[in-house]
Amino acid sequence: MNCEEIWELLSASLDGELSPDQEALLTAHLDQCPECRALREELLGIHQACGELAPAVPADLKERVMANLPARKVKGKVVYWKRWGALAAALILVALAAWRLPHGLLQGPEPSPAEDSARTSVTMSLKRADREDGEEADDAGEAETMGAVMPDTLPKASLKAARKSDAEEAVPAADEPASSLPTSGAYQIPRSSSASPAYGDDLDGQPESAAIFVGGSMSYAAEPAYCGVLTLSDFVPDKDYPAEEPFPGGVRYTLPAADFQALVKTLGRNADLRLTGPDIDLGAPWGLVVVINGER
Amino acid sequence: MTEEELIHKAARGDQEAFAQLLELHQSKVYGLTLRLVGNPEDAMELTQETFFNAWRGLPGFHGDSKFSTWLYRLASNVSIDFLRREKRHRAAAATALSLDEEPDRVAPVPDRRFTPQGELERKELRLAIERGLGQLSDEHRQVLVLREFNGLSYAEIAQVLGVEEGTVKSRISRARLALRKILLADGNFSIPTAST
Image (cartoon, rainbow over all chains, first blue to last red; front, side, top):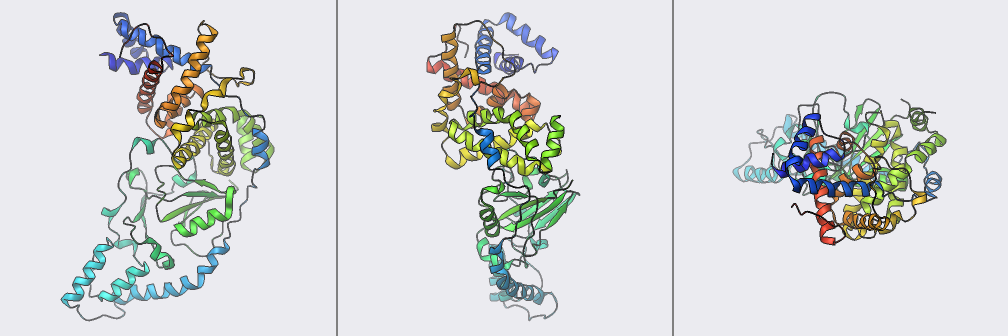
C-alpha cells in the first residue's frame, strides 16, 4: 500500500473504526514510513484538540424552545383554497370535455396536414407522447393549455435526471413515513391534472413529469422533486387532490406549488417544513404534504 | 424514565417528556448547528427549529435509528438548508471563535483523549481548529463535526448523511487532511516532519 492509501486507514484508526487486519496493515506501514508516522501524530493532535472543544449552550435554550412549542394538532384548513373552488370546477369540466372528445364521444374528421403539423408542434413542446387517433389540433392544444395531461401519456424519458452530487447526498430526508410507501410499483402523478386545472398556467415551462417510484427496483434518483415537504398530524384539504396516496400511518397529498406555499404561509413558523434533501427542488411545481396519524 | 418512554410520551403530545428529551440532547444539537453555521445567534435559531421539527415529526419517528441520530439529521438538514439559503457559510464560520471560552459550562464530550501539552499551545490549536473548520467545505465540515464533536460512529454518520459507510470513512480522512493543510498554512500548527 502506498502512503495515500494508508492515510484513510490512519484517519479511521483515530476513530477506532479499523478491523484487526487493517490495523495490522497500518502498523506494518507505519513501522517503515517515518512520514506517515509524523502525519499520524499531527492528526492525533487535531483529533485530541477537537475533543476539547465544546460550545457553551445558551442558558435559555430550553426555555425558548418550550415556550414556542406549537400544539401537536394542526388544523390545515386553508381558506385560500376556497377562492379557487368555483374556477377549478369550471375548468375541470372544460378539461374533461377536451379529453373525452378525441376518445370516441365525438370523432372528428381526419386532420389536414397543417393541423397535423400544428398538433405535433404542440405535443412535442410539452414533451407529451403523440396520440395516434384523429383528434383535432385545437382540442389537443386546449387540453394541454388546461393542463389535462393524463398520466399514461407522460414519457418516462422526461423524468428528472439523477441528482447525485455529493452536496445533495449529504442532506438526507428526515426520518418520516413519507419515504416508506406501502407497495411496489411505479406511480405517475400528472404535472397538472383535470382536478386542478386552474394551476395549469403556472406549470408552463416545467419540463419534467412527476413520478413516484415505489419499491426497491427503481432508482432513487428517479423520484420526483418537490418544492418542499410539509409534515402535519391533521389536515383536511378543501378539495380533492388526485395524488392522494394512503400509506401506513397517514396520507400524502401532492399539491400544486401555489397551494403548497399558501398552506405553509398559513401555518407560519408552526410548519414542519423540510426544504432540503435529495427529493427537494425548490423550483419544483409540486409540494408534498405528509399527514401522519396522531395515534399510532 | 427511559429515553424510549420519553419518546413515546412526547410523541403523544406530552410536553414535559419532550422537555426532558430536549435537556438530554440540546448541547449536542446546539453544538452541531453552531459548528455548521458558525455563529451562536443562528445556531440558537436553528436549534429551536430542529426541536420544533422533532416535536412535529415525533409521531413519525419509528426508532429506525437512534433518537440522537435522528435529531442530528434534522439539525444537519436545517443547518445545511440555512447555509444554502443564506449563502454565507464562509463568512459565518469565520466568527465561530468565541465558542469554547467558558469551559465550566461545557457539556461532556465523548472520546476526550488528552495528551500533556502546554495550556497555551492547546488553546492556540483549538482556536486554529475553530478557524480552520470555517474554511473547510460544507461537506468536510459536516462530516468532521459529526465525528469529532458529536462523537458519532461511521455507521451513525452514514445514517445521518444518507451515504455509505465507506464514503464516510474516506470523507473524514479527506476532511482531516484538508484541516491539517489549513492549519499548516495558518502557521498555528508546528509540524516536525512534512509529509504531503
